[in-house]
Length: 303
Image (cartoon, rainbow, N blue to C red):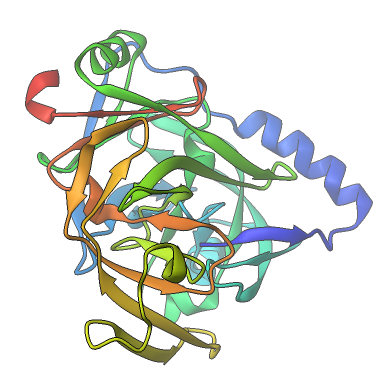
């Protein structure tokens, strides 16, 4: 969702946040893998149950491109959040977003509970009647799998993770970490054979590419098969995107893992490309942050 570029927080809060982040890392994997059913919205984004502080169960989007957890202001208030400064970042198309920061007493996903969690507040979530978003920051020490066939989030154990590795295909991850506040992950993909280092973003429905790929892929933005869309974002910024159909998009390290005839968007991105949830349809995606890798498998092969 966003990427940091500046840090407008007083120095004393930096030390406070470092201490908070140290204690909010989740414990090592539980002794038994836990499966948490999820639902999806109209865009295919993953929605999971969670608990915030002493509040009742809420439902949040698991967005691997969010950078940090962001909650509705009303939920932060109910959870007795404590103000902790501000974070300025940039969304996928360079749109600036200023996020007030808070520390909430607890955030729980299944049996995995974190204490004194740093989160952002975004007033549009209340407007849209959404509880919030959780990010990769919640899983820095806990490998997890999104099984898009059985619609379950699995909190892996060392034993079940080893089975995923044996049954699946691995690809290395690269990370963009901003001052211990945000965390985003990237892997290498191919678009009609053209390479790109793409953010893996479960908050996006489909793939997006930088407009520099127009020339690389031989796409005429004024061509009859290209659809131009100009729209305003949620915060009022005007963006232009060109939609085209490619032959395929594939994982660079395992080209056999591909999506045929994808409809992609091309715009002025701050990255090479973004891979959305449609790429993982019919697959299980395991994210192993401690070992800097993803594992792609057939869900039937890991049961």
